[in-house]
Length: 400
Ligand code: CTP
Image (tube, rainbow, N blue to C red; front, side):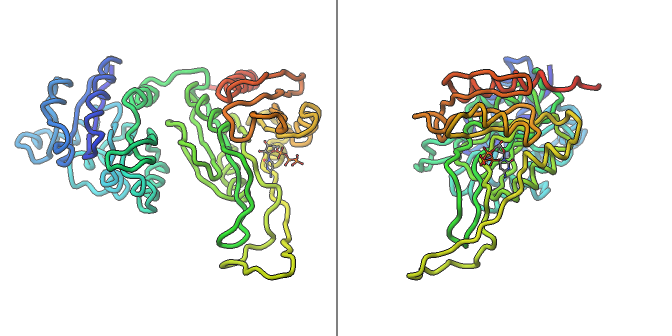
């Protein structure tokens, strides 16, 4: 079906790349494996050669490789460049545009989409240098299959383990053969809490985990949408295929959402945005004193209401809000729907035991201008599907 360049770099997960190659072949794709020098310390090239039935590219200095300038000819033939596992080194070389081996030269030479599955030690993954490189690549349109959490080969428990081969193949399939009811749509999802800094140490936050918004983002990706996930601080692994923008405060979330909302078909405000922020942030740490501490708080911008105002009388983007209420959620949700100019409001009762905040479960009332619909207690992933079913019906037909 398609020719996929599978870049294998030197991480312990390199052995899993064999399964990735097989998975791609099962979907009918042809795989050209490229192994970096360090990858060959983990797996032999013969393994990939036997599986892919192609010569494995290990160096740009192999005699013959320059007769047709192999990295250039392969670059124009491939439908996808997939790197699994992608080490911090490979990510850094791609981000820096350093073409010092075949794979990094191929990255610069190809116009095919690029998908990377990072894998490394937790501290390496969280290092500002790696995070900056990932952000640079993300901004250039590189997509990622997020690493999982668990036991790492280095003995740590944490995030950094290469995603499972099935998940990587699925993500590749989404790039190679996009399909789904939201194909061609751009959906912005805001999720998680916001943190409003008081000083360099303290902040005002809330108990939102981000689970509901992340579930909506994952479902939208599954349906073929391009998804921009604007996330406040959350420990969740973002769904692969979504473009992640991390923010901290309500003001930052406001900027990020509004920047992308104009082009979006739908905005889902699942975030628990702080309504107030300290009037000023104190540098350093506020020292305690015997007198009570008074903190002046000012209102934050209301993102959903601003979106409602910005689209005026138009119908795009479709606007979906959430209303966490502790009394008569349906009625208060309906008022918020009208006040903020949204199309659909998902109201839930936060006083219900075991539901809502930080839980995998939720019960909600879906409120539109036409009426209400109850979603009895169920998984947030199931609620995400119902929300998108209803929201899809509100989308204007696509112009091609
Ligand atoms: N929201 C927003 N910007 C804010 C506050 C809330 O976009 N500054 C969005 C939320 O993401 C949610 C909806 O508005 O989709 C309702 O949020 P909620 O906190 O329930 O409503 P508030 O307007 O803050 O009303 P109140 O706190 O008085 O219930």
